[in-house]
Length: 138
Image 1 (cartoon, rainbow, N blue to C red):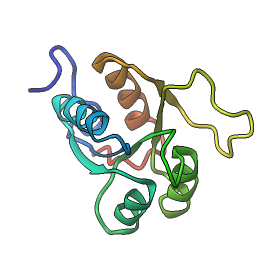
Image 2 (image 1 turned 90 degrees about the vertical axis):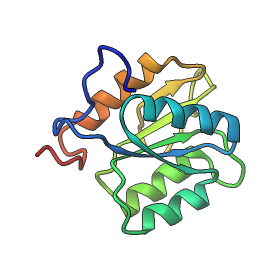
Image 3 (image 1 turned 45 degrees about the vertical axis):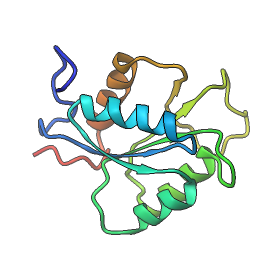
Image 4 (image 1 turned 60 degrees about the vertical axis):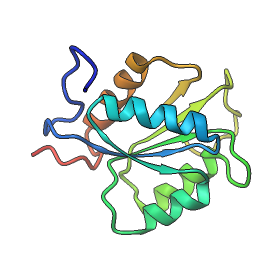
């Protein structure tokens, strides 16, 4: 059931397809549950490499939500490569760090852990409704 009192997140009033990436299975599962409770479809990846495989496919993805600190490929590295594959894809970086490195290659909106579902909903609404987000408005 979608979050009470919250309207669907995109302009088309349809559920978005959100790729959730986190190497920690419990955190990934919790994030997927929150996304689905907000009325969206969630796809899971447990590494940057797995996420890139999904992004390189023809699957429709409306937003990438990725953890910052992952082994093998950080969320920033994933975001940089994801932008090469899908330049208009909105990306939300989720992190437990208070600040990201100053030399981060791209400027990304981020959500600090731990977060509440209302915080996630606010970020998703802004990103999915942003001009040029790639989400079909109708």
